[in-house]
Image: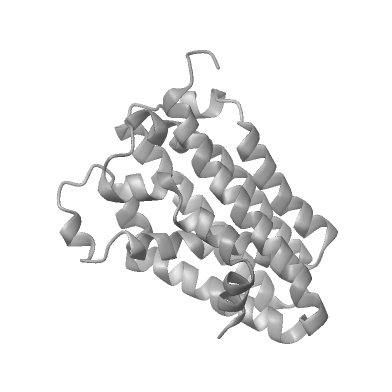
Amino acid sequence: MDIFDRLKAAARTDWDSYVDHAFVRQMGDGTLPDAAFRTYLVQDYLFLIQFARAWALAAYKSRTITDIRAAQAGLASILDETELHVRMCGRWGLSPEVLEAAPEHQATVAYTRFVLDCGAAGDLLDLHVALAPCVIGYAEIGRKLTPGGIDALDNHPYREWISEYAGDGYQGVAGAARQHLNDLAARSMTDQRFSELASIFGKASRLEADFWQMGLDGATAKPGT
């Protein structure tokens, strides 16, 4: 059992609230309301901006070239993901101007600033544990939603999103992040520290669940709220 599996086991309830959230289930079966997905898309764009900052912080916190290169790869992946995200938003009727003008929802602020605070106040391992539910979790969700493979999605309304995270490209990103997390843990984790890291991981997972819920709430919110 690697460090990621250990963290999931220690924060099982929080983890399940994230990867088995109603938003994920409804996306998987194609019943997620369009309005919920659009709310999510806008906020996820703003989310990615803050996560790019977190990867830049990871480079600053790094003390070896290997760690700096890992942070560089993470930042490059986020920037690529942002470009893909903007194109996807366009196909859902969301222009770059709409994305740039949108205010951050409370769930977006809470999650992204938590991650940044973990990195600013802690060390590189703290930051990567806070990032892990998103970076590695999206890959697990992508696999979960494609039990028959990507081709089996056919005309699924959320095929593009699911395919992005189930595809080989993102699966490779998540695999590299998982291995780097293991390497960091091997260098600096103690049994006493594990409980602190599990707390960070659990909190980040709960904030991920809150982010999904924000999308669902967006489908029922009255105009102007």
